Image (cartoon, rainbow, N blue to C red; front, side):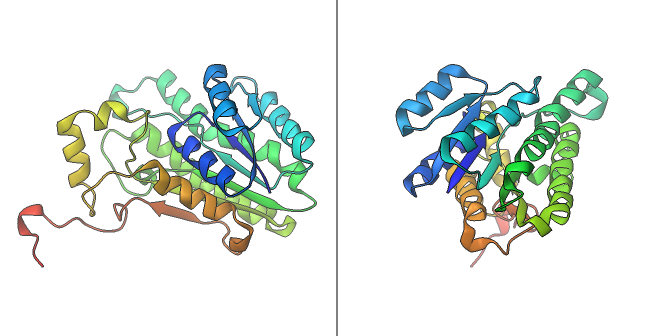
Length: 248
């Protein structure tokens, strides 16, 4: 099974690649940071490919490279993303466009590039949305809109390409400990607030998200299609108990 991972230098992506390689999958890691890609290649013994979001043709080139390397393309994951927290009134149009471009437009490029090689034998595509697209959260307008678009794209694409045996699903994580969120979880006050917002009272770990993505890629789960799966400790569906009232 050959898997192409976009945004491969992120914390969750590294956890995913470790999982996939450990299961004997053939993986290509695609990203923009040459040094980090070289580190992945050295650690996991996998080929890498440099992409540039401002040059959409590099997405197609990464797909072609994967097919040349392994003979086929069975799965694609897009972990390209950014974090921007601010209310609409304080958000410039330039910032808004950047959030949409990185989080939503990247999924469009990934989807468009992946379709042709999957036309004959099918495959699995996984996007990443967010709990912010599932519930209203203050100061999340831009990222919530972008990630809601990702979820909508996944569902619609699943409907369009199911007859070609191409599955498209989406994972919607809650607050997860990654390099991108370091500024939040390293601050005691903001970390405590984030933990209190979660029914389980904890923050997510990268492997919680990567294991779900790996599960969606697995051929044994080929009846799972057009889904947005929340991996958030219940944050999107469960109201946390006030800590002062917790009782058994």
